[in-house]
Length: 196
Length: 266
Image (tube, rainbow over all chains, first blue to last red; front, side, top):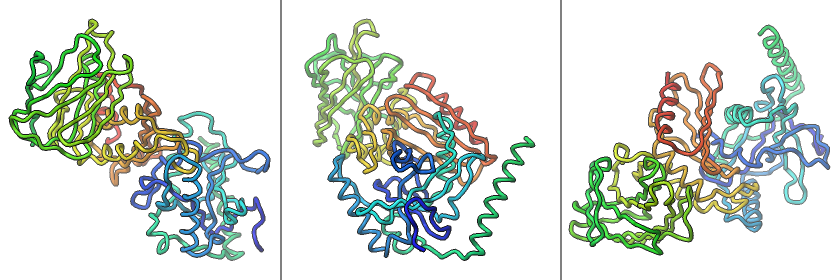
């Protein structure tokens, strides 16, 4: 079944985001400067999304071949260059497999990936989403930034073709196990929190 | 070359020495803000120079700034290197601005200094530092501007990120003031964890990070700016999170940073 707008991505899919500065990528890591400014923001209120913050990106399963991914990224950079602010260059991507980024941060913030197509420019658009957002000051955001940087990988543009993981179909059994694992993790964290 | 090259003032403008500032280097004393000033400094030892340091004697030299040369220049003994400084358009307490043309053996710098805090005396130092030289023991707050410092080299490349949306995701511009401040902070940053990874941030800041492979520290992030503020925050392998913010650069800043890095290494 094809995804509908706003649906969570398949666990086996891969979320990725275009990096437009070379210094955001180092030794397979995303440097945290990539999360600054308006990178993580609230969703458009008109869309009435069930999450509180989002980091825009794309879904590997819908983005096509590696060549199409690169072509889209380069077009994105051209479009953004036309908007002003200097020349943008496709330097690489930050990414995570969906199942690896679906986590619960500090018993409250649930991260996930949701399909948010943006036709005609990006029919593979997807957001890394955060619900239960309770961060309202700088120290909390800083701690969250460290956590987020722990959970994303990065590739230079020349590495994308060879190393960006492909989406893998997740079986019903695996999906069920994943859901159970998430539930157990949540319960364990709540229990740990309670006995502290 | 590991020692500071010595300069002497080669014009009739008197060279004033202070014990504090030994060894001697070229210095120009100004009684008033000039429209422009040319100070030709004669090097006593042939050297290759990478940078120009401009500092102010007030505030224990904390308002120093470093200009990396676009290409190293070689100055022979007996030759004069012209340093031009312009004070315009007005006196300002905290802002320093400069333009650098980068032509060989000709340095154009614009700097704005405060004259009110030091007996109404405006005094600007110009110091050319040889390749690989640390000014650390001589002056507080001056960047160690060796070209091998990748963070300082990166800052030069960030000068083009001075417009909104430089990243395509609605980033805030990175101002010259933020870059100048970052140069000063990076210059006094402890080396315990080695050189940082550096990147620009969409909020108009400069971000540094250290991820030691071993030891109790998992990650140390250090955000500089926008403007003259910094925030260090870290996570130990134990999971403990900590943070330390700061503003400006004072005579204590270097010691505070050193203590922080030492603490995080234990």
